Image (cartoon, rainbow, N blue to C red; front, side, top):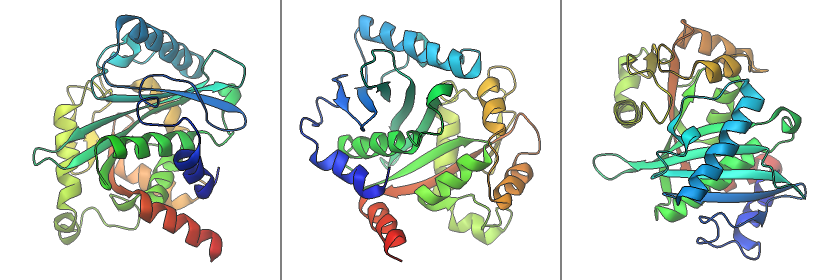
Length: 279
């Protein structure tokens, strides 16, 4: 789905308004899929519904259920959950759980969060639009034009996608993360990573025994970590070998994960995507 199609989807589709995009109302998302989106605390029935379907999709995809609070219908206070349904079906086939938060100084942040696409619906180009829509609508909710976004993992292809999707991304293959001057230049990204690691270990499936070293969480997937998810993501190598080599360098141990921090601005993103098509 192209950037302009996404913009049209969000800005012009009848019935898409903030309230109906936070209360689980079902809307057309694309020719093949509908979407429901739930934001913040939910009543018991809705929390149980979400737990049932999130855990089911997780098991269908990873052959296990991740030990995240959301899989039990818990910890929904700062979560934005978008579910995709095939047309004509009441059984969801994909989801993104993002969460919104603020630095101590009030700077808005969003964690890109957990993506699960069940096997039958993979490679259909739905993951990026899900993430785009969720982030954009969170920007509106937070009354922000620009937001810092975090991503956590050890997927080479996921890292390449994040670099292409965001601006001011740190760390990334083009930047020497061991260079002291580069570290000083990216102090805000380091601050975001530090607060993220301190505050959201349980929400992000990070082991409580982990240590943040620069932008790498060492031991993220020891006891209490999201081992199954990382095993699945580790197999997603990139077509660009530089990202494969970079992930191997950043995360030499299988328990390690890298925190990538980038900035998202809807206007700049659309302008960048349009320029790619024109030039």
